[in-house]
Image: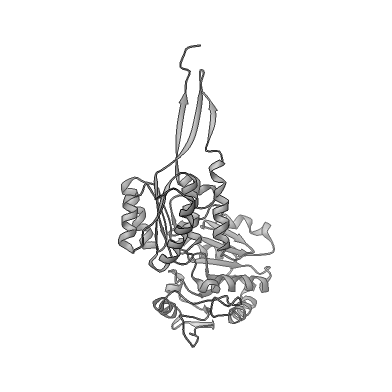
Length: 371
């Protein structure tokens, strides 16, 4: 909620930012101007996992750029979207911010009618939205998840890295696209990290999110918990692999090792508090493993020698790289997005969002009279 308020405050200044540039004419008198103008109606299709922040970081820049907004939230987040609209509509003209509850059919309807569409959700649905928008010739962006890796080098502070990784694996029960799902220990880091990370995950507080001590809350549904359980079934586990007793769809933070290369845990986004521990001979091998999956959202790298690793980081095929920090966490004033199946179209958040929700116009101003 604090982030949501900060997002609206950040974009409140955007209408006063420059919207173009002035250039001298290449020949003769006159001026050349560029301006950015709104598309019209921005269609926003959002998930349930951050039911206030994600609609806000799409809607706020769209509105600041002069568009009207039609928001289609995930069915599980309908009440949050309606409450957000109730608040925002107090200071906006009538019908500038509209919520359309529903499922896939309503989402398709929004994408078929909007002048620009921004989507966050599953890969299949995002690709369908992108295809529909492309067929209509309208701008589209789609954020579609990740299979994020954390690379830990032998010179890293192993205890600190384990703390970061445990939070990135289990925080929000792993239900965020930036969660860490693959941990790659390089060379001599493997043994110490194996023990430290397993212990850190076993120490993660699991329970009611109303308890301030809780780090790993419940999964969104019973079906989601079943899918997480299916992902760790039959694997060699260093931590977790259990379902706590009592009400609620909880799963213990889980770390697996010796995972077969073709296992779904290494090919698909599970969206739960479970990760695989892998090993790499050296940094180049770790980069190869990181890049071997269809996704490319975010990679975290843990090392004490940035100079030695800087060149290798350029080889990572991910949109965001975080050094000595968890893979999770969003700086909403900077561009957000990935490569391959993680993202389609321009970046969102920061000033990049204002560019997405507008189109560029070039004006040539010539004298009306011959001087």
